[in-house]
Image (cartoon, rainbow, N blue to C red; front, side, top):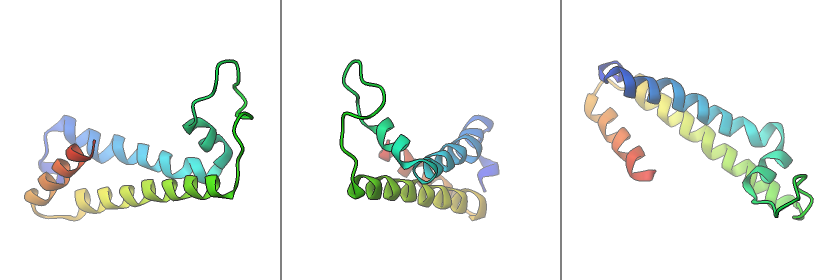
Length: 100
């Protein structure tokens, strides 16, 4: 039912957003250290991420955040591509608007 949306929102929510969510899902799984370092603000002059200790908890949180991105991807694709009611799509988009 996403085909009922105007062109710009349809492109954003059915193409751009799913791609960005897949990127958020793959980041922590392909390179958890890079993902953790990209989330932490480094002090001036330190660019290698060596300023903060890494432990199993940091890796676990990064993987859980990746899982959340994957779940949001599946939810968005399921709602936008499988529903037959425009009201459901509208409510999904309102929920996204409230979350941001």
